[in-house]
Image (cartoon, rainbow, N blue to C red; front, side, top):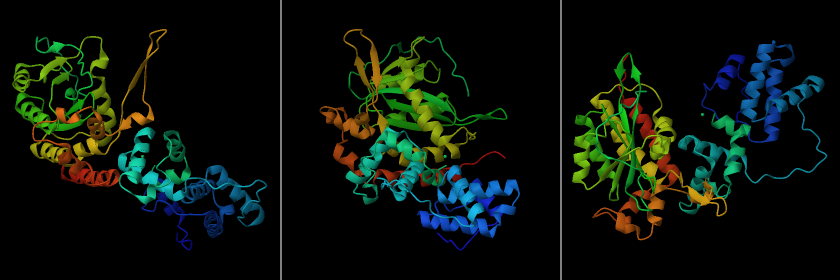
Length: 412
């Protein structure tokens, strides 16, 4: 840290608001105390107006990682004595397990993954060290999910990482109203459409989300509109991307899926078409949840005009970067169902050991090779799955996502 530079009050306000590139300044207590004293003396803190004092406090909190109570205690010490001194401790202090560098590593990884759940992030941290040999994750490899949330609440972490068109029902008697029963086999897809907003009466693009119920293997494609002209090629493309054989296609009752052309396409592939039952919202709950934690998290709610160029740019990103990231490098929670022998009550839990990548889940199935499509092997899939570490692929995916946004055209 450059302790010789003291910013102006305006620069401090800009720093706190996020208009800066520096993320973490003071690395130890002596450096922090010395810099705090220098800022207070340079700006003659005692004579400042109240709004300016607030700006100074917020700036010092940001660069030091200290809480407001700590900063105010140090300022009180300065007002009384003219110095900022280390407090005398009457009790011994203990070295923490995780250093500021570990917290910074977690914060940067969280920024790449856009802050996944604690259990999922714990899996990524463990894999980075054990599978990919990244030494900077040595202390973090065995961190618990609950302690990840603790570190996310620290000031050091916060200095680095501070982050509808209604489906039309149809009465067509196409598809069976039933809940799919995969019985532990992959190939049972849950499918849903997500709209990218309206603007001035103009529709945006649509995303079609496919999620396998057993492995949570996920494929996303983008279309200009949910008409046969665009839907049928998109469905064909998505079904081709899956590495295993598709047996069942389950959707809600939207007319983009429940129609004779889609039914004919699925019949030619020997794929059964089922649709959600009335008053059973959980029938398509898996893909609905993925819409929120995956699509909305990465694509947001902004209106994207439905042009061919926009759809092509999004699909290029999806196929080449996003879909591999979802299935090879993003952990998913797999449910464990427990039934009480006495009462018969069923409860669902998501234990830490059940968090894994969809690809690892697929490989863990008994005799998993039997589910793959012809000419697809795990040796071939391994080449892509382990070409880069989880964090490396996530970093590249984020860069490619930004490149995608730069290519999109928006109406003025």
